[in-house]
Amino acid sequence: MRRAVCPGSFDPVTNGHIDIVSRASGLFDEVVVAVGINQSKNRLFSAEERVAMLTEACADYANVRVDTFTGLLTDFCNEQGIHAIVKGLRAVSDFDYELQMAQMNSSLTDVETVFVPTSPEYSFLASSLVKEVAMFGGDVSSLVPAFVNKQLIERLAERSRD
Image 1 (tube, helix red, strand yellow):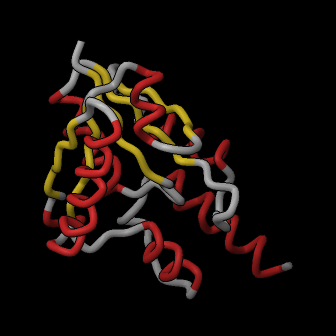
Image 2 (cartoon, rainbow, N blue to C red):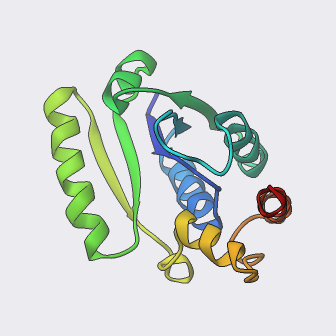
């Protein structure tokens, strides 16, 4: 069985993330969308919320499941019997960073990184930009699934009241 992981923070999940997961699901028998948990990072959504959002966003893909990991992604890959990491690339700047990570990961364990160029309509899309635009009242409804947009608006409203 050909298994791959699509790792990320997914804070929040965007249509660009779903595009990469969708395309990976056509290339591999099983795709694990792995939410990285890093307690030192200040996230808008908890790990549990991100997992729930991803589970809903990936519900149409029978060969996709969502999980979490802490520590090294390569350790997670070893534990899960995964030999491929799928990374979306938006720009040349992504490639510079991701190539270095891919080489480090392959030096740590038997894993290959598969680079998937993002669809042009998502080439500018990043979770951090989505959060920033939404924080200032911009409309991000075309950039994230509808249920994520709703949760994003609610969370930002909660934070503005605090």
